[in-house]
Image (cartoon, rainbow, N blue to C red; front, side, top):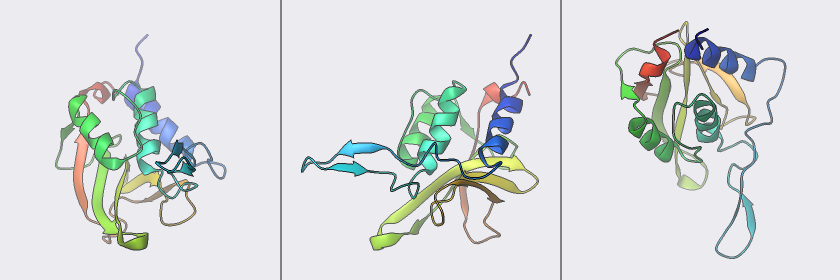
Length: 154
């Protein structure tokens, strides 16, 4: 038997948005310099990199999990992912950074699933993975699209 990584990845992505809210990627705790415990994902508001990296780690497509888009992209590139021009189902998408709360720039990452649709964590809304147009209906520029040769087998 042959493991179909791409087909399995796409099924996990579709399942992550089925049947209600997915609380799996909402919280990740650190202790700050003052000794206070902080939820760096802010109850799902900053969970896109965790969502993407934990799924990719489960499929052995990156080396470790991540809490930031920058570290996820670095791992993608070190793990054999390369840039492609046109999206393919299963590709990882990095969108442009936008100004978020407090004037901080907010990067975003997710997956292309086909038919002009993507799945990513809804960082500006409810904090759950959701399905949306891959360019947010032309309101957010796609900066990079990544592909891994391990997904070529279907």
